Image (tube, rainbow, N blue to C red; front, side, top):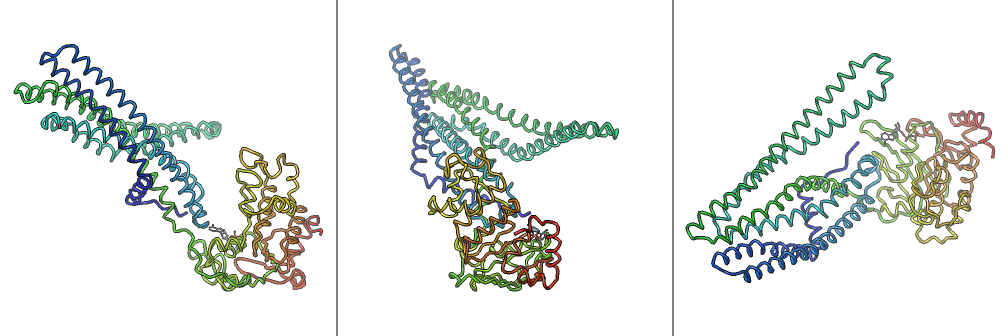
Length: 584
Ligand code: ADP
């Protein structure tokens, strides 16, 4: 199974830049507000230093009161600015996430069907749910926190430098050790935590298996073996836990130890500078307070760095979906006519294993062709080639003289419709479910389409076309879902229809009635029906028998019965087995 690609670092950086640039005014406002709040936060320590200096110089209570009032004013201003900064930041984040989600949906819908099928729906589901929401948190919370914390730290250290350059240098003393230990930790953390998660999952699996299979364990007397197995798993988990604990022990110890160190150094160097009269007492006090203030943003920065890395990994996976070449726009001008011609078509899912070995087929417009054959003969594969979902490895499938895969995808879907056994009912009203086949269809047309396909249940819906259906609302059964899909087909009214056991979920009588009603509505349309009920073959203009990737017989029902070949045998045995289903 081929995986969907993952974007590289450059692409992730570019995408992040684009997110910021497309909403740059909001980003500037957020940055300006946070910057102003941080500057307002710088004032109190400086004012406190001023109080100390003034009091030392003999100032009275009135000066202290005035300065204390100024401190209160600054704190209040900071709180207000922070509040608006957060608000603006979240609004930006929500807009960015909404944009990301929309982009993701657009890209996903642009993926060629064959790519989605090969990657598996799980892969796409994880990317569209877990990854997109991780990116959402990152864009909304993590990136702003990191940007703001960095801004605050720059301003705080800048302020210490302004007080005295030497104090600034001393204050930076702790940063190299924090930087080094963070790098050391991050390099090891993700693999260590992944290993811990995997070991925990394995242990749970082992214990659950032993508990659920307790009787078997007893019957086979393998309790000792299971205990050994469990103990080994516990030992693995213990080892991986110790590994992560060791990482945390080093990381947090170094970080925690790094915090008081520069404060002490600033006090020490500050005391020396003060004794030489090079700096005021207030300045030393302010510098120590700034350092104390820096701990909180530094902590936040460290905490969120790991989360940011996880977010970037998810972002790379989300962007990877966009790296799949979307369906190429058609290279062909619109083809002339609707004659479907297959010449020498070969196809393989895996290299070297052809499933179709040179198919030749001519279907004239308006013809009804039934394709029958044993399971695994390649009928569904042929249907996919005819619908242009896959291109033949060799040979050509053309409509009106133009290869189907060269048609513009939108044009191709408008002209050729493939209906399989798998139907999806979208959450929404009946009308919504029908409208995407024909957005302009009137209510009457929708009702008549439902009637045509025998969807009698429609009459009992409480709100008619507005009745909500799908998960969480009225659930449709397999047969009802199939009828809905067929009603869509009637509304879409394509020139060529490929029905791959499209009535398999209906009971034989309803299926036959529906097929006949469809045939009446779709007069003049080319219909290729892959059928496991031979009624369909009986009613068709021609029948093609597919066997082991080759068309072995082709002709009208009567011709083939007369020829007394494989189809005739199939018809006789089916007729004998299902007389009820075969009645006209
Ligand atoms: P039918 O519709 O006649 O039952 P299919 O066209 O589904 O036959 O399958 C033809 C052959 O191709 C089978 O051998 C099947 O195992 C194989 N095949 C079908 N789909 C895939 C796929 N997605 N990947 C690999 N092999 C496939």
